[in-house]
Image (tube, rainbow, N blue to C red; front, top):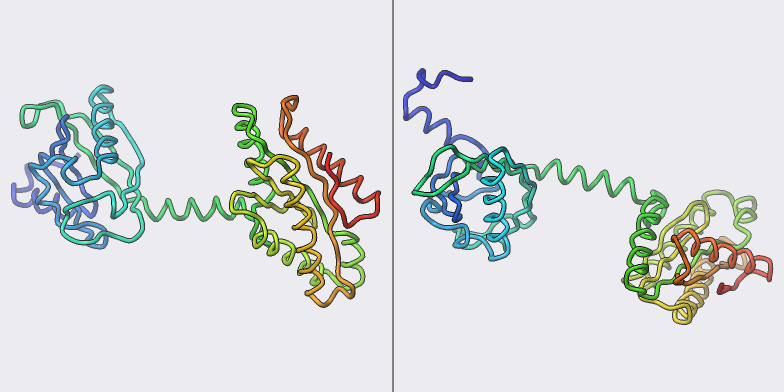
Length: 305
């Protein structure tokens, strides 16, 4: 630990003010008792006017309530309390100009003080800017959940979505349907026209899914030429109508590709979550069985199981 006797009071004050990220002394009631640092002008305004104000004076009601609850938790724990949180421009009011367009992420390290300030228990709140690491974390997560060829969610993200929606179905019995489909004679397309054309057929199929499906629908590439569409809040009858329209639109898109001769079609199997299901795997298995029947019955069709 540094020997502060080597520094004058003015030097210590200058060191504290030079901190790039801000540190606050906040009382239990949410009053700003002191402010140090925040010298990085890319993200922070001069905060000296905050001293004496309350959090509720400068933050939205929701954010102010959250900060006050974290102060209370830190004081109750009597130890270091660490939190992560975003602050956007519309969270802050009356700080002297527009803030950054994108939210800034912070790690807050909240340490109770051993003495009172302004007649109240108080904490030291050190706010470290972690926006860059949060952006990297989001990028890596997106890459790990996105199919590189089509840009659709990949198998990993699909399974997460199926798990989430099955849990919602199990709790609320909200109608939910699952379509699984693939491109008919896809191996023949690769063999006759080459893998680049095969890849183009897959990307065109994905583009049609993005364009034709509803915002709430969840299309994903399962692997190869196989796709799954999760349709929340949708019973089997409505899902069949959506699936048939998708089948026709994909056939049109593959025909417009121009390199597949007479074009190509898809076959699909459709199933709805039922009360007797114990996991999403059972729904997916029924849909897969229906896909097999669609292939057996002549392809270019959707079969409901």
